[in-house]
Length: 271
Image (cartoon, rainbow, N blue to C red; front, side, top):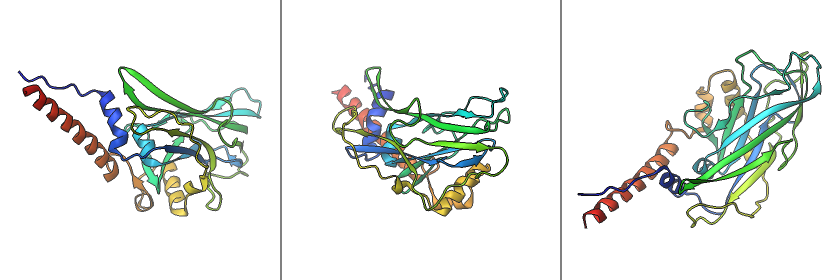
């Protein structure tokens, strides 16, 4: 009787970075594209957009961004909320509808939940977020790296914006002549280890590398209006999910590696 090896989720996670060709040290930089230190109209479904530089590593290790806009002061009407948020943004194929990369950055976009027609309470807001990633899982334990701040963005520049209700502010507008706001980074170390560990290596921040052109901005505005597969999106960005070649190749690479292990296990089991 042949005993087949068990292929666990831990094995998949350990293989994924190598399958995606991640080189070490692998630094993932988090830059905030929108909002910035500006005055905006208190739009419903107010958006937030990050860029995660080093797309291969960001997708290989996975990410979950928990975010919110925290009211600091302004309109005192108690019918309003003190904080606004939307669903966590992650690399799950089933969460969110914006699965694009630009150059070497994953564009990560979310919106304030609009199930009750929420629009931002007039006043000033701090952008708060945390970024979590699990690089691997071995023996039923996980290694999770966590960056970000519980009060402003402690690892980068603080972003405090103002929301107004009189229409005098900006809409969902991203400047083409200004760099995103550097908001933090983390680095995975030794690539020969089964589980890459958090490295003390500090790369020089380069938020301008994640700067968008007008076509990419037009795509994000189409997404905000409900069309995440517009002509400009498909022409100016690359999809990373299963509909695109990159993700399919990555998944097939992992599958091929697992299949090889399976065959080796079968051969060894028959000896």
